[in-house]
Image (cartoon, rainbow, N blue to C red):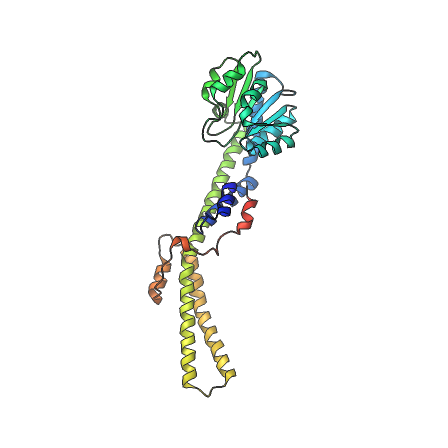
Length: 326
């Protein structure tokens, strides 16, 4: 999301209505990572999956493991594998990301196009991409298994899955995927990791709901802002007209007195408008279906419209800080 948002901003295709939505999504993502145990749950998932792999082929120390995917889950997998002594090879659609992750674990990067060759040399395949379709087909794994006698463990941590389910039917191939791990977790509900994951998911949902409510309130407040601005403009015009009329009626009034009268009148008008304009913004932010902006326009005869795409940027998060979220 962050990369897509940055590219859209660079191309100038993000409008005022979309800016706060993207920024809020990045912000809530960062909060979920820092304020919940979702990352710990991910690390636990990786560890359990690799434990299952070791049950099949023994210790991963010295084993060749191909990690496909260089995102957060891929980084967790590569780091855990390196701690267990595995020789890690990282492959990703973005070669720079694969190279960076491989360097961080003293591993090696490989192009995704070289997957068949790399797979034939691997003892374990770990996949965790964000692809919407299959990344590893049955034919690729079947080719890699041709002529080899040692088993291959396929650990698919992606949702949706990266690996064709048909791979599990190939001789010598053992599949560990989310369905298997979830089944084991459901069979042992008393396990600590299950409770932690449930709490973390609930906390993440709560954060998303909170940030969504804040975004909705800010959007509703933004919708009334042009009306408030129009009201203040109208008030200023009325004050200017009355001061001009006063100047015509009292031509002998000295400049100092005239300036003091102007300041006093403007101060009175500002004070009269302050409370209702603040209140209408607060009410608009929490009013549900009530159209306070429309009521204000009707009361003061403000003939303006407020298209969504012309909403003010005043309530959005600072775009320069959006990249801080993950």
